[in-house]
Length: 354
Image (cartoon, rainbow, N blue to C red):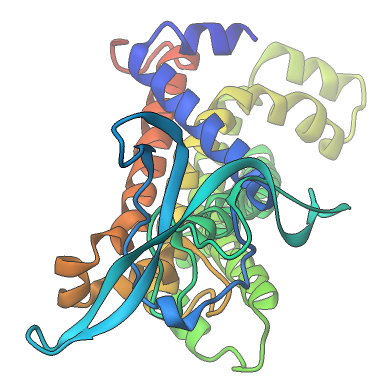
């Protein structure tokens, strides 16, 4: 709690913390907040623009929020498909509206969503994609993958890095030399290109869940070496402390000393490294999915959603498809701001605090 209080003293870190807390809360309750499920599709509304919400009726009076459905037509003059509002019927927005069935938090069956329209209405706050899927809903479901991949990778990276670096630094000598040469060999591997190669040779019949798990494992297996090297350097200085020497005299085993007394001394660095490492994993997953080598359609991630926006016509005429890119930027920037502030707080030797 003390750390959070110090974070909130920095206005930029405070904003970053609130943004990240909001993002993770939203993806946690994505099924409830999104008006549609992740599998919903209406091909008749492919590339439909965002729904227009009205709060003033045709008589100029305030009204409950409502919208109109879009009608897809072909404009022979423009030689392209256009969407026009069907003003013959209003569809009012309801709170806790009935919609498609899902399991709340993956456990409780329900059909209630935070908001929605009356039966027959189509509400798309951020338009639809090429398959007529609601972009807003897919952003929420895609965020579950893009924002959690980093933390799942850290569950593998940090235990390996801590133990490997701790053993290397504690024993020193030939053990340290051999272990560090291996770590340096791993660090020399061009990680992104390795990811592309490994992702490309994965069996095509794999589900997105399996592919997601493998991406996490691949990211972790090439990311531990740099962390282990820093931990090793810290251990080299910590092992000479008096309390460590006392433990040796008392007959404590090397593993006990490493796990109980040395590794806990690296806590400050671990917290900083974790915060600053998450953005790189988010970008790696998004980059792979953008290239078509990560999470596959119809499952959503911010990376494969952004892929659709790479076409020049979509950038010009369907800017809502760029929203995943904006969210990636916001999430990565927030993590970096938060990580910098935590480093300033926990590391007295860091740069002058803002």
